[in-house]
Amino acid sequence: MQKLTARDMVQIALVAAIYVALTITPPLNAISYGAYQFRISEMMNFMAFYNRKYIIGVTIGCMISNFFSFGLLDVFVGGGSTLVFVLLGVILFSKYKNEYLFNGLIRKDFFFFSIFFSVSMITIAAELYFVAGLPFFFTWFTTAVGEFASLFIGAILMDKISKRIDLTQ
Image (tube, rainbow, N blue to C red; front, side):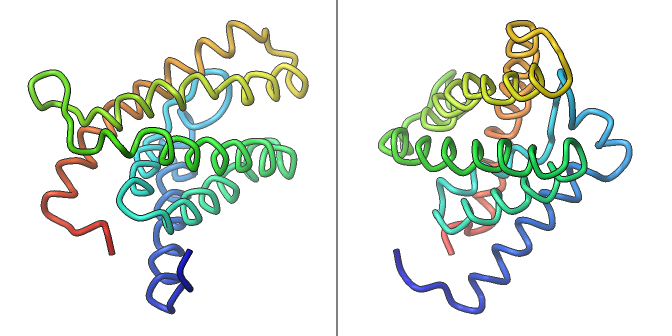
C-alpha cells in the first residue's frame, strides 16, 4: 500500500465523519442500532471498491458510531467486523466491477458484497446474544435483512454518485 498523503488523511477523516453523522444523528440513530438495523451510513462501504484507503475511513466511522451502543465492546466487535469483511469483500468481488445485474440496475461486485456482508452479521448477532440476551438466529436474520436492504439501496446510489464524482482519488 502506498503512503497516505495529507489529502488522503483528510478524505479518510471526512468519510469517517459522514459515516458517524449518518449513524448517530437523530432520527437516524433510532434505526442504526439493535436487532433491527438499517444504517444509511453502510452505503459508504462501497467507497472501498473505488479506493482501498476508504476502508480506514469506514472502519473508523463505524468504531466511533458503535461507541454509542455497547461501548468499547461494540467498537471492537462491530469495527473489527467492518474492517475484516469490507477488506475481504473488496478482495473477493472487485473482479466483477464492470459487470451489472438486473438490466444495469446494480453492479455485480456490489450485489455480491451486499450478500456477503449481510451474512457477516453473524458477528453482530453473536454480540447482541451475549450482551443483550437477544435470540441469536432471529437477530442474525433481522440484522442481515436490514444490512442487505441498506447495502442494496446504497449500491445503486453509490454507483450513480460515482458517475458524477471521482471516488478513485
